[in-house]
Amino acid sequence: ADIPVIPDLEEVQEEDLAMQVAAPPSVQVNRVLTYHDLDKDLMKYAAFQTLDGEVDLKLLTKVLAPEQELREDDVGWDWDHLFTEVSSELVTEWDLGQSEKED
Image (cartoon, rainbow, N blue to C red; front, side, top):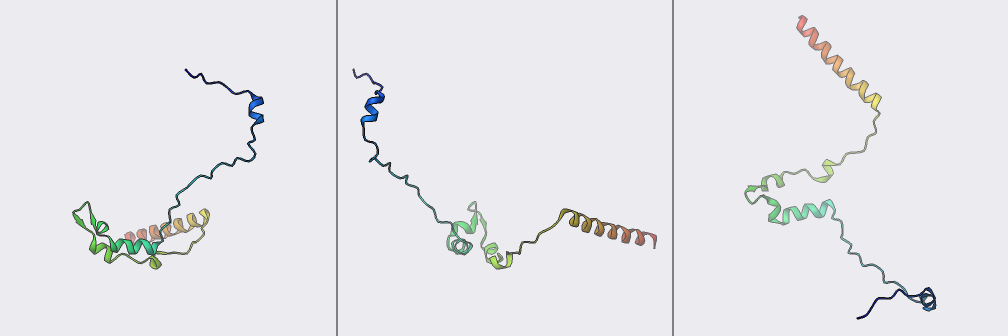
C-alpha cells in the first residue's frame, strides 16, 4: 500500500547531516606468526607430524635446519657479469674434456 517516494532536494537540505557521523568499520586483525612461533607450533601439534594420517614426519621435523642456518645475505648480481662467469666456466670444462680425449 505504501508507495516509495523520492524525496525533494529541498527536504534533504533541511535535514542537519553535519552532526551525524558514520560508524568506523570493524576489521579483525590477525597477528602474523614469526618463524620462532611456527617452529614451536610444528613440534607441539601432532597434526604436523603426519602427512595424510599415514606418513610419519617425526624424523623429518627432528632434522630440519634451524632458521639462522637458512638465512643468507642478499647479494646483488649483474646479468652480464653472471653470463660471462658461467660461459667462462663452461669453456674451461669443455677445454679440459677435449684435452682428456686427446691424451
